[in-house]
Length: 133
Image (cartoon, rainbow, N blue to C red; front, side, top):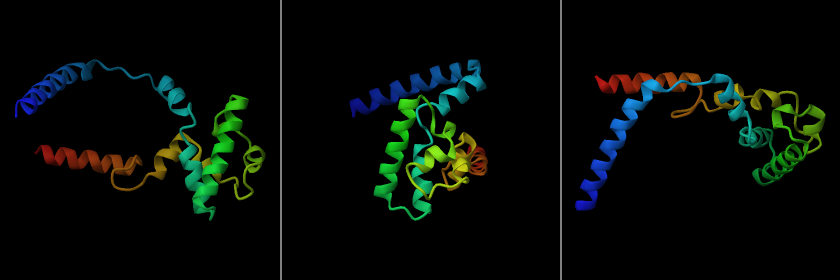
């Protein structure tokens, strides 16, 4: 039981520090957008797109891997590639791929309970506020 009590005390201290810290947080939207776009954050979205187009997941994974390797070599993100460049890796890729390769498209694609789509986030906030009483 002693380790549990120690853990609870530690968590309480962390929560207090966090509560004091949160009001002072100032976000820099432009920096956040640059950071979110880096690191091929939409690679999973490209794989999902390919699977929805009928590509087996194993093949989609390979296509995305080659696309990312190309992007690394060229110093560009997936969303910065042209349609012709992306089609080098799969001919099922169409103009609509850019709908899922944007940050907004990536966020919107997770439109399910617990997802990142704005409607889901609003619903989660509403549930949390209701639970607070």
